[in-house]
Length: 196
Image (tube, rainbow, N blue to C red):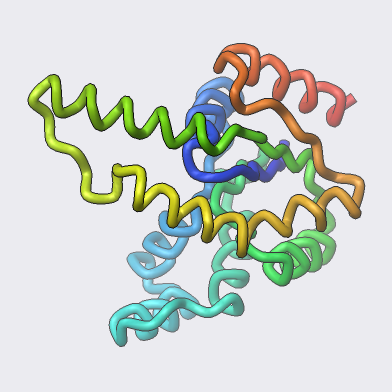
């Protein structure tokens, strides 16, 4: 089972990925984790990434694509994987498709969790209020203004992936505002159909 989750921050991708990871024993691959693993393993591509990061630069698509390509070949991905936060752009999606074609593997699903952005912002506001009321500390990026910026960035850079995967006939859209268990059941239904 090989899948990609799409959707803005707060859509529930992490929650759903964790449930699938627990149930099927497949890893959730996040770009940040893959980068850190390549750097700590001291692989050739990891050394290139470290040099860029140490210089304060952004790791190029070329390096990220190569790290993902190596990661999906790892033994822990033999039964499949969930890509989270990758691809972020259409060029990355095209590179992933080419990498997978060369490895003779295919995606089982690209699942987009559609959400009401204003409802997500209200959730953040409520979470902040509840954290403060409970005497907790609010993370610096856990506020409506920072969240709105992340949503804008998502719309500009990542949302075009929906159109791309829709054109490829690979996109399935689900209501991310539905009950968490209902979303999980819908995802499992998609995966059962894909493996049939």
